[in-house]
Image 1 (cartoon, rainbow, N blue to C red):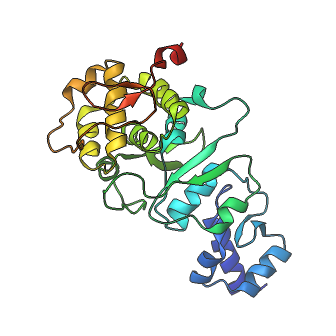
Image 2 (spheres, helix red, strand yellow):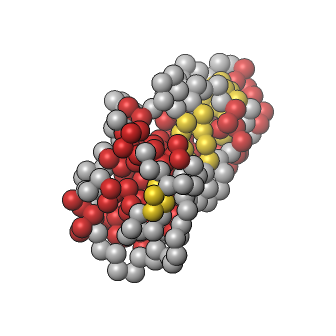
Length: 273
């Protein structure tokens, strides 16, 4: 192998961590032709866990590596949000028994097709832009934590020795979760999670409520927080928060919350027990 070609494969291997994946698109942009990539695969430098994506020989295929690769390598502004963001940040007891997990991703465009074809126990669910009108933040290393925080996002490690991923803070994740509630079973889950949300930050909650387009998500979030009498709720600035007008029937035959005018299942306490 010539020095030029040797240098090229060495640069590529230096780019790849044990869990990093690179797409055919990334390789083309960075000057690696299809024939050269095929040669690397044939020589045992690279392996392809799914068509259109590669990783180094001996690398470990993990869901967190997939997300990290999308966010930093592919430049796709997808963040881990909703239910799985809450699980990632310490609420593992809400992971269903025997369920390896569904990684809930939010962003302006769908992940590449190869993501859903990877041989992983976990599966990915793309839930769109979510309920917020906040501008998109590029997930580059140059983006400060303070800028992410202003959008209800944070960097969080999925485990020891793993790179940090951009995911929703608990405040944003709960509103994303409430936006996806469509039946009583989902209300029970949201209520159980809200019970544990004792340390949410009032100013961040207020900011996200002002930028949330979903009336249902805002009313459900506030009604559940009020139901659990969280101390932070009295400090949330609600000026400029649009809660809509009229009553909202989230579940049939439920009880109407007197302040936030949304129906909740009447047996919430029984399900918490």
